[in-house]
Image: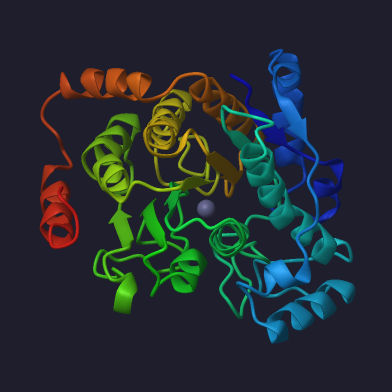
Length: 347
Ligand SMILES: [Zn+2]
């Protein structure tokens, strides 16, 4: 099975100065994949730029014009979100990288899944506002492309980044065509992501927020994916799976509050690959969100590629290992989640 990697040196041109979201992050991942002999096993896909028309499916014209001017003048969007002259074009290339990833899957050039190693990240960007290191909402631009151009009816976005993807939630809050499932620390930036934010109108029930207690480790995340994420995703039966893969839940992350390791990322990725295998011929794009320890990030992305060679069987093995360890410290949280979600999903 052939997996793909979307990467381009131009992703280094979004310059952020002394900032955790640095060009070194993706540079180190590529060097590590090369060193491990993984890079030449992959189909390396060159990204195209997202067109303005494609960006306008998600963002307002006013915001896009404003963002362009901020980049030209190197004016930060906010205290966290800095830009350089090249940032607008690089942001279009990041969103476009996800589109290229999906196109390579839909045209049959890869059959094992694709990892889009892009920056700047996307999930905090709202329709009318970039924030939290994010300029354009990359996963939302891909989901809307799949729905409007490629006749997808059901796109699943799994977001395991440490932070809640407020932008992705906002953009699809009233849509049943996108099921957004996020695991995150609810007590940090950006402050959204409570269980009760479940969507509205015909989108009610299609926004699933799972607040994860600080200090959670591989076993906790595997339980959450096994008991909540996987059953809901399989019931939804998506046409396409997008994973907002944030590696800031790694135990060595400088911004982190969780304790996940390479083993945990492999298990979570196996679950997502398994869902895509069962539902949609493995149409799955992982896209880079956070992860601010470049070394830990490189090991973790490598673990995702290892997972792309397997599938659900690997995740079942991980679940079995965890279930032998009792008791489950997250049992009360699971009960609350299941009570709240049971009107919409069989959990
Ligand atoms: Zn994050």
